[in-house]
Image (cartoon, rainbow, N blue to C red; front, top):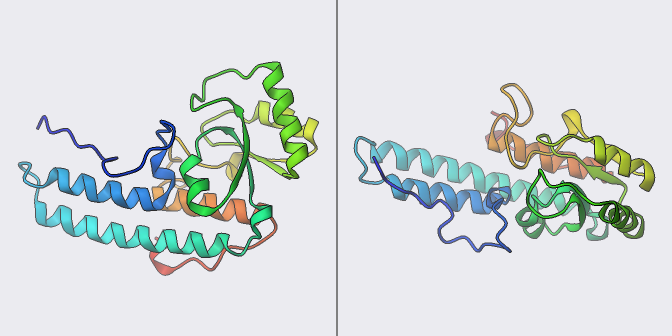
Length: 205
């Protein structure tokens, strides 16, 4: 159609971080922006698009409310996050999480951290009291495992890895945006020694 839709319109960008979708409130705005952008585009059925958008926005509201209430079970001082790279800026802002640092500097998951960077991350982990490094599903956990050994913390990887830049395969915990976000929230809370609230029916499918 040649139509260009800016799904990020109306969303406050943080330091150029592209990972706006990690905050469900932003994802809700993205759905509304996409629906608005498709309005009047042939051969799109606007009635169907708007109905689907409204339904999904309701689900995203439930997701956001569940995540907020679940994170509230964890004392603020214990909400410490160390990741492979800086993919969770919006997520930590939304849910009151203290981002200790990342192994890979910046938003480029292909960047190579220097020896000085690795030493600094190890020192930051030890000083913060963080007990884990959370690897991401789209990035090899090898360096995280090496740093975790030096910092004497646990690595969450494999089936316990977080989803950020991409979703998981069909049948995995990250096969949809909803399930990936539920997985991320539950993984973090359980790693910190608590349990998330029971999952609402709207988030189980």
